[in-house]
Length: 336
Ligand code: ASN
Ligand code: ZN
Image 1: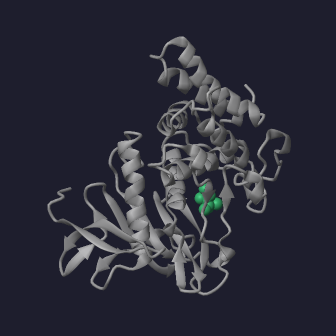
Image 2: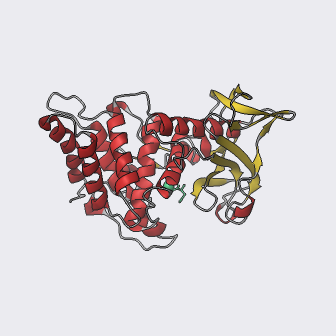
Image 3: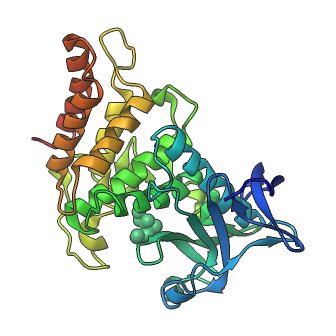
């Protein structure tokens, strides 16, 4: 695609923050297509993506009229994640072939709707290969789930997992699927702060009623998740059982990631940089995990990836890096 007709636009996002994003010229104005990153954002007009999946992605968003906050959030946040994939992980969008990164806002799954035009969720559709976002009512009107960069990154990483490890969405593989999405959501949100000891570890804050976050990677127990294998919850593989607790037991693996990112040496210095942890976890997810991988497989995948990634270091430094990973898994009871 040619970028010649792309133009920078500026408008407010779902949190009232001014964002700059690229839109493409089209007859009569502009459409939400970033031709540099191949990111496109659509509107479903409060249709139901679970019933009318064949109607996705919906209508490509155009201006005039003015860009809406939900459109700006979904589009600008997707571009931020595409930038991370390309610049940090050297991955060319979700499919690693530069394929379009597609989002649809204003979706309502009616069977799970707490009120008019509300649906407090979002998901990656493996069938349509795109993100869909609902919205929640606040004092100032509807707020899209895409307002939160960590939620957007979480959903986009379900797409990355879908075309790499393909972790089955149930039981331990499903909890790993959830955890890798949570971890990269937090890594992307805190990009630019090289000290994870001062990171924001909360996922999805300012969306739910009372602004309660969905999850907290530093202390999973704050949101009823286990943080150690001793507290692993065996649940049925049904929707009511959260598919074997995929959003519950993910807390254990999330806590291991928090410990890797904050591991200190004897002098109190960080052992690993955030980009080192991101690279190692990305290698594990994309090269060493598969549909039926368990927590212990993730440990082995991460440790093997660390040995590959740090192979050029003197052995004492290499072993110190690897130990930061094994210690983190040990601490949450994920053994070899
Ligand atoms: N927002 C949820 C998630 O991405 C939707 C789901 O349950 N798949 O985890
Ligand atoms: Zn998820």
